[in-house]
Image (cartoon, rainbow, N blue to C red):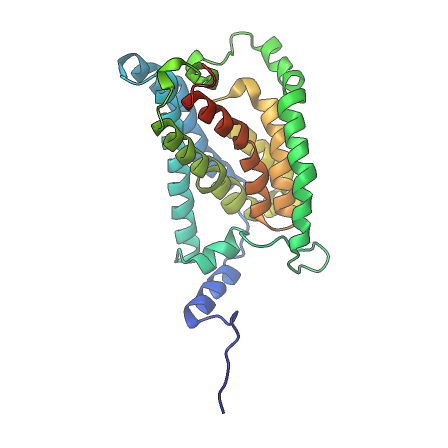
Length: 276
């Protein structure tokens, strides 16, 4: 007589990982949350306002490319910080433990806590909302910043439109930079830390409005883009709400990642010589 083992049965190692996740249930204090915010936000501001202006005059690269590489370095730092935090909490970086800790799972029904892939349909209105903010409302939301702080303007090297020039026609290495940037922007860097590491641990400090606090803190992380803080915060609600509501950070990754599609199209158009 043979005995079959269910495919979803956990190995002893997986069981240890699950135990580690279940035991690490403590919520972060407000000071710990703010400390993590400072640890990743201040370097990004430093790279934009101090490092970039200091090295761009001496860099052989286009100013926009130099700035882009600095931003990628800042997001890689976020990923490193996230890994250190996870390892200190879990004692392991095994996927089975990290997946549960970061809510990298199928959306769960808020009433029953059961996985329900049908909840991914929520992505449609959320992506539309995010697009509405970016394309129509951003100008109105950000206008008060320009009125109150007229000197606070985007430095030319931060404008992606500066890269739409003939010198980049046929330069396929720019696509590589774009894909690495997307990886750390929409998953391994920002999403990994803000919605994976922080959001599940913010309820103790902010209660049922933890997703709002997460959106605001993630907004003020963008000290390297202070002229757009209001619209960034409003957009962030489309990431933190579904992640918290359905306990699935794949929702946040998908909505945030959809923002990158127009950039990808523009980069390909520049490389192919269709613009610039």
